Image (cartoon, rainbow, N blue to C red; front, side, top):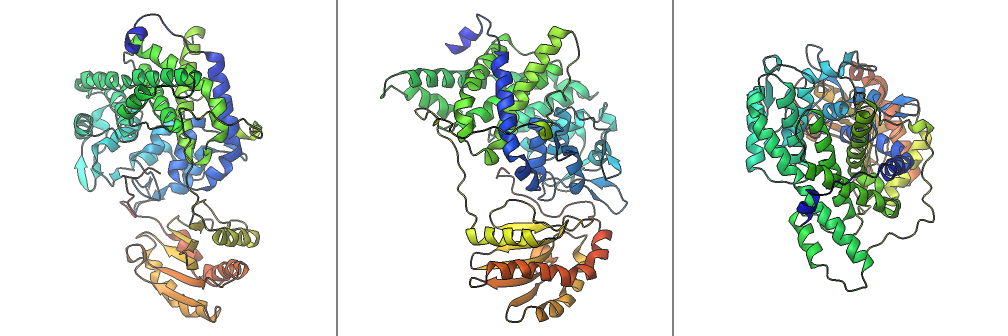
Length: 525
């Protein structure tokens, strides 16, 4: 059996192949990193930091982008919305990944006037009570507070939870929850960190060690998958694949290569972070990690050029963090120094992107590659591109969604923005209010509607008071016959007509504590 072999002869990581894999993933990311940053979402930013560190891009470090997600409550305290489209998708994901990347929580966020630690301590309103969602929160908290007595009360969907209750909730979720996506692996990370670093939680040490060992058992299964894949690739056509299919089904991996990378990366990351916290990693699990990484690192050059990298960069980011941390731990041990979590960070401004032209087809006897269907209409993209040529500095379209682009004037909160929105039969040039803090601007936009309508004879202009919890939006709608240039100019006209009247309100608006728009936690970002 695979496990028995892992208990026998030690297996070493091929460090040269690991370094080559890290370099390849970085050079491929260099081709796409601007697009990912421009998607303007906290989950994308957090995962970039997780996989490539506090990297430099266009003369700025990634941490600087945290500032656009920081709001202030009625008392001026900074925070980031949790389980919200304007903040963290998963509770404290951004804080946890910053810590994993070696960023000091006491570091100031440029342009915010507050440190990561201060923002984190105020981000206690969480819009879910799902226990398996607490992994990032517990991991970040473990690196923020040293004693349970210092931890503020959290409010999960309005219900107060002490740190002991959070940990108990996490333990129950481990026992009763499912293994959907990576949530339970992160739950193990968070529980291990909280128990190891927060005084007063020591009684949960046995549970944390047990959950960790259970998670790492999956490495043996992944090892069998990779060994079977190697056998089938070398065999004549028609080789028996029943064992491979059965083993992949046990982990719900399917044929996608990205699923294998996802699981292997998360488990390697978990093992390294837990080992740094003093948890025992069985030799058989260490050997399995080496076998899995050696196999995957050997496959990457054949598969990576053909992946839908932008849609799957989270997968490769976790894998890169796991591999880089294992290398750093091994080298620090040999060199007699402490582990530097930030050593893996890259400087995208100094990196040449990978040249993927002419890459031979990826072998497909065993694995498939996931490609997200592209749904953006060419007509909508044409409108976006034409508007981009007209946009003034600071008013460029942001994001890469299939059906909308935001335009956020400098100094405005994220919940107040212009938008191009594709309805299919119509395209809207719009001004949106999307939080209770900017709700008072509704009457201003309503009163501007006649003025705006006068600039668009023959077009439908309406004030929609039902939008976003009755905050409202002002829309100019263009039908299917409208030329793309007219729509692009129309958005510029809408901005010119409304910006002077609301700019002062926008700069003064502050998002009050609590929530704006919850996200669907059943769907990954």
